[in-house]
Length: 215
Image 1: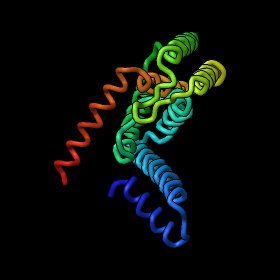
Image 2: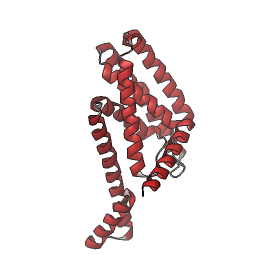
Image 3: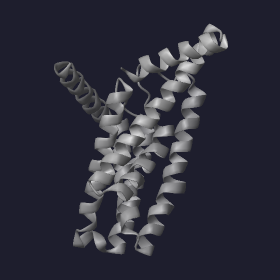
Image 4: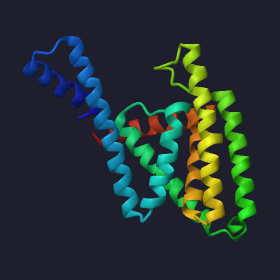
């Protein structure tokens, strides 16, 4: 059963038991859908990351993407099931990339890491200016003031939070944190660009066809 259908079914049961109004039933369905979606994504992510031995790195990549995504927006899958599968795959792939980057000799130099951090932050600020907040067509942001506020917060998160964090990680020798947070930023930047939206849409369509074949 789809997560959305399950949420509506449970909300209808609650409405019947508690004599809720139609508006309250819709609010309950929306809340349940959000809880189920996040729970499925986190469970899928944590279990697969644990199986592949990437738990710490995957959590750091996902945390970076999750915080930035809240204000930058980005590509979405059409259902919670596909969002969980795509998200877990992407975060684990990012964690694997972060592990591989740690093994490259040239990237173990602190000066190189600091330069990479500054360059990544510069690219991020440009991407925020050009594409953020990157809302999906189904839920566009129509208020210009909200768009400006979200863009301003996104800039602060990159320049005032992400950059100091990775600079500290580089100077303290926290390689896993440095590379995981950097890869997380790259993933989020991909997801706000037109390329990221096209890639996500194609992968979403592929999973839709794949699941229909298995039914």
